[in-house]
Picture 1 (spheres, protein in one colour):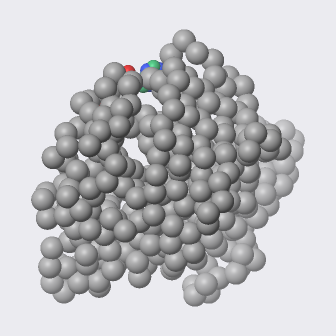
Picture 2 (cartoon, helix red, strand yellow):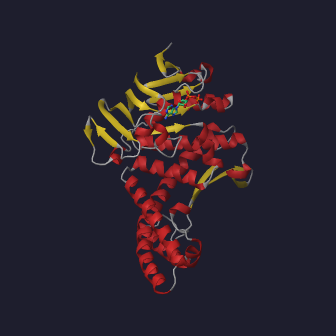
Picture 3 (cartoon, protein in one colour):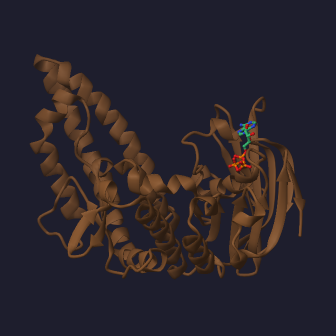
Length: 382
Ligand SMILES: Nc1ncnc2c1ncn2[C@@H]1O[C@H](COP(=O)(O)OP(=O)(O)OP(=O)(O)O)[C@@H](O)[C@H]1O
């Protein structure tokens, strides 16, 4: 798939802009702060309804405006659809396809599929478990958009359960009994949605594993495909470990909730469920298997982060649809060998959008259309 036209209205720094695009490689080149990332961020937002840079929508709306609109013509198998999202400050967003409103905004998720490489990717390796969980969930939702609903149900249940735990922890006598009875209902909700997310993440990590090894071998100097490994680490370890069913996971969560109830009431937070899990990353050093965080060199950490993104790209491709690759300011971060390797790996993708401060940062393998971005003006160059 590829985006053949992008229109922005009051999105980030752009009052209004129209950018015709084509399949293949397009590079946006310009000095810092000119609006390059804002263009690719808009396309990524259409894909996931989330920015790769900020957690909330407010910064996406141009300062002083109260609504931003991102519209893109997306070509898939020769057919074009116009996808549109209206981002409203302080009100619900609205989505449209071919100008017809969608009943739910999240129905737009996954209709454009993007994989973004950016300097922030190092947090996949060096950051908190929440960064790695987000990586898994974003990918899981792109592959099965209905899981966006399960994810948001889970977040809502977690919030309500946490506030109940706080009340119940402080209550005494019959008030406490009443709160504990209500808590049992929320335990059920948490176990039901949590088990579904857990099952999906376990299956995703299984599917991703071989691609991570293969990608690491390509981007890390002298590495073999066995040198990089990922393992999902749930707080709940079901007895039956090979592909446990949703029912088994649900039961395991319920049992762990019962076991940790006192702890949860004391601390007033939910300690059991997929919001406490991690994706463990390991590299081989000789005969040793070492965690990447704390052990890997800067270069190895970058290789691992790139391998995770490339693996996501390969997996989405294997599903049968070429996602749009966005390489946001990433080449300036890499040494020359990794630059060339990454460029060669992605050059054949159906659409690659690159941002760079100077033309020399765009590797030769990614020669293609070029736009100059200066003070919010986007002009076609050589
Ligand atoms: N909501 C907003 N309203 C108005 N301007 C904004 C908004 N959000 C960001 N900007 C402006 O957009 C510009 C940043 O654009 P962008 O991040 O696309 O830069 P860039 O060209 O990618 O730069 P770099 O190479 O430094 O990453 C900044 O000048 C910033 O002030």
